[in-house]
Structures are given as C-alpha cells and as structure tokens.
Length: 225
Image (cartoon, rainbow, N blue to C red; front, side, top):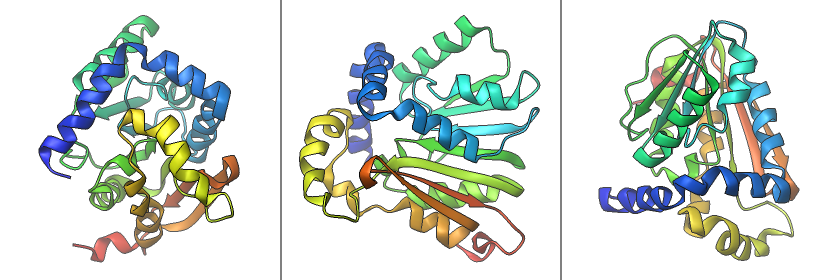
C-alpha cells in the first residue's frame, strides 16, 4: 500500500469520525465487539501504574477499559494516523478528565516506540496496515520482559463459514477501508514468530480472533532485521 492508499483509508475514517462511536455501538449490539475489546484488554494483564500503547486507537474506544486497568497513576499512549479520529479521542479524554493519556498522530509503521512499556494492543485495525509485521516487531522491542502484545482483529475463518467472508466484508468491513484481499495478512503469525506463550482465541464463529504473546529473554525478535 502506497502513501496515497493510506491517505484513502485516512479519508474514509475522516468521513466516519463524527459518527464512529455511534457505529461502534451498533457493531457492539450486532457482533459483541465491546465485549471482545474488554477480553483483549484483560489479556494484557495490566497493573495499576503501567504504561500501555493503543495502536490505531481511533476515537479511544479502548480508553475507558484501559483506564480501569492502569489507573490514574498509569499511562495510555494512543497512536493513530487520522487527525479527525484523534480529535474525537481528544474530546473523549477531555470529557472524562483523564490527565494520563497521550495522543500521537503517526503512521504506526513509522511510530517511534518508547522503551520498557507494559503492554501494546491493537483492536480491529492492524489488518489494514500492510507493514503489520514491522509494527509487531517494533512493539515487541518496546515491551518490557514478561509483558504482552495483544491483537484483536478480523479474519477469514478456517471453517465451513469461510465462503461468507466476502459478503460480510462487503456489508460491514469495506465501508471502513477493509478489503477481502487483506485476508492474506496474518498478524498472528508475526506474534508467533517474535514472542512466546502465544495464545489465539477464536470468536464470533472464527471471524474474530484475539492473539496474545508475551516477551521473554528468548523471544525471537532480537535476531530479526
């Protein structure tokens, strides 16, 4: 994906930004996406005072749950490519009175990660990033030892429901920049390659997954380019 294609996706999210939270609420009713977010964040095993990075944070839908995990003494760093989505995230932060949230506008593939963070998460977004492997590798390098990376995303299921993927993509994913061709991107494989204790949980009949990996001294990222 070149810069113009990334800008196309950014324009799609600029279009949706003002109503994105409402759409997310509808998707929560239809697909239970809010519960999946909660489950993914719980998998980070965050503690009060921890620092967590929310990649492709959008309007900050994960922030309330992350706040419960890290507390006022913790830190949340939200990174997103789209200015309009970050504007909505800023409104959420201001209205909630959170003083521990940092918002960064950046292509996540070019983002300069801080060091020694306690968790990295991406929800329903990483498949849109062609450089997902680089993003996951950089996330792994940023993690402190014993800490987790969690990806919650969509995929074509490995079961008899796979033929329904193009239709569901057209109805529910394509309006937000998703393309069925992106199904060839498998972020969970990168997590398996770079981290340890990897667990992959299938949800919603296999169309949704949560992949969790933990960083140890013997993690593979240290030998990767």
